[in-house]
Amino acid sequence: MMTNQESLAIYSAMAQLSEQMLVAARNNDWDQLVLLEQHSAAHVQVLKQHDGAAPLQGEQRERKIELIRQMLTADRQIRDLTMPWMAQLSALINNTGAERRLANAYGGV
Image 1 (cartoon, rainbow, N blue to C red):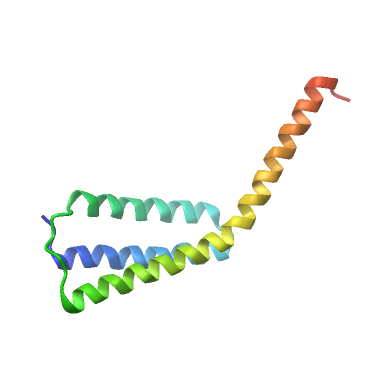
Image 2: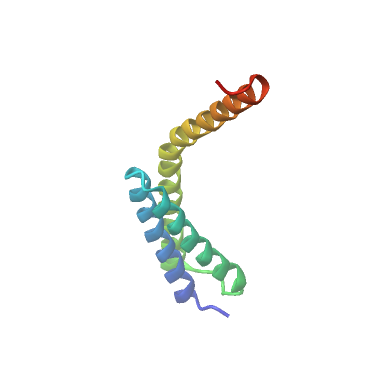
């Protein structure tokens, strides 16, 4: 069973990872973003496995809420940065697929 302090330490580490992910997204460093997402997912798994910690009270509860808010804010900003890139990637993939279908249908030039 995980203590409340250990649980808060994991939430804090996840908040820090979220900020690093935001920096990676701002720098268009998609490989780093994916790596940091994997680290964050590992923390989530630890929390899920040890979900038996006593409910937080007082300052600890407020700290957890603040950490979650930080993560949600960073996540929203990351999505704002990645959505245009994802749209461009999707358009490129669709365009390449259409070109390939045309080449297959009419033969290469």
